[in-house]
Image (cartoon, rainbow, N blue to C red):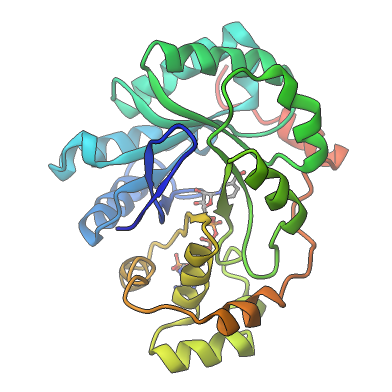
Length: 282
Ligand code: NAP
């Protein structure tokens, strides 16, 4: 697995396995165990996915050294604010059954964001979390929060794929040395994306599937991707992307597919209201 370097000099596997919407108590356990067997060494979960405990069990039972696996989790909104965030971090550590988390993100940009960020910064100093990052942060939200942060986030995890390239956001993140992580790297299974002509013609040329071409393109863009699949063949295929290279011209043929329109707008007040009402514990 290829690695990228973060702004704190730590390394992160370029492709991680996402477990959003995979149920706990079995399915996530099976998927993570299969992913680790297939060669993934980076798992992306969240307190809000309510499957951290299956992720932790699968990692333990895999027999792979903890230090060889990169675990990302995320704090849910209900646990924002300084005091609540400290408890939320402890809960993630407990659910995962680990004594440190490699990367911990603030999942959504609402509520007492900077209070929660302060608790994340302290957890870094205490060695409970190795790196901290942000997610769903737009340019406006970055301007709102950046001055309240004393540790620079290592990543911003946002919607990113050939149809949603976040060009303006990336310029600013690059300037701050914050790496982008792609959620919905395959457009959440969007057929228009996976059956796009330009992508299919590259798939034909390199004897790969459309998903592999997209993930290779994301890798060459310097962005971390987090594809999800519960299909064993696709799971394996999604990390079998390091034996070919897209030319500059081929990279451009995908760059021009950008619509500039994410499907999720974090600044939309109805999203804020909906997400703030999601409770993951009493
Ligand atoms: P995705 O990875 O873009 O798409 C997954 C879908 O694509 C599944 O339906 C999967 O079906 C299919 N698929 C996988 N590989 C394929 C391939 N090679 N060819 C064709 N289809 C393929 O979207 P996602 O799972 O929704 O998002 C990925 C991860 O991003 C999540 O698991 C989560 O970790 C993270 N995420 C974060 C946020 C955030 O707010 N920070 C939001 C959303 C997601 P099969 O299972 O049948 O293969």
